[in-house]
Length: 141
Image 1: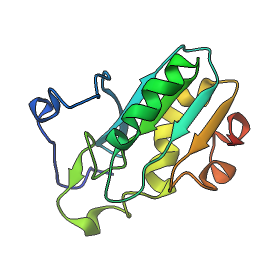
Image 2 (image 1 turned 180 degrees about the vertical axis):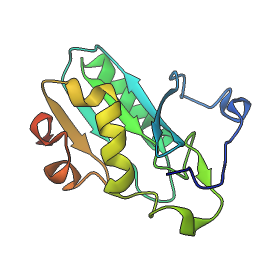
Image 3 (image 1 turned 90 degrees about the vertical axis):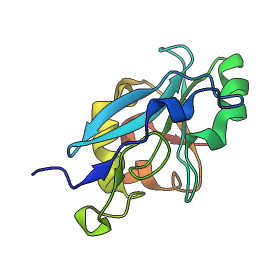
């Protein structure tokens, strides 16, 4: 399957964002680049932060800082179409950006899937891990 037509926001657009010093991480989801924040100790319990619409992982910037200081690993993906992730130019070319169709492949390809324990939060995070390949690593928070 080839990737639908998309645009990629230039990295320079994200330089100097207030309270958002996080290094970008990316995975390929059906030919589209999906961004996620991954901060904190690799072996720490994970706080998975899934944004709603129309926002992106920037929403969690202060929560990420606080929780990493408390010893958590914070993971916050940007749905396709939002934040640093690719934006599909023809919405008929893919499912709604905030669906398990894009989150499941992200989960399988990111380091989130290998964590022994995790927590989740966010408008779109409610209930999603119960049906995901990462279910065994997820506990409701």
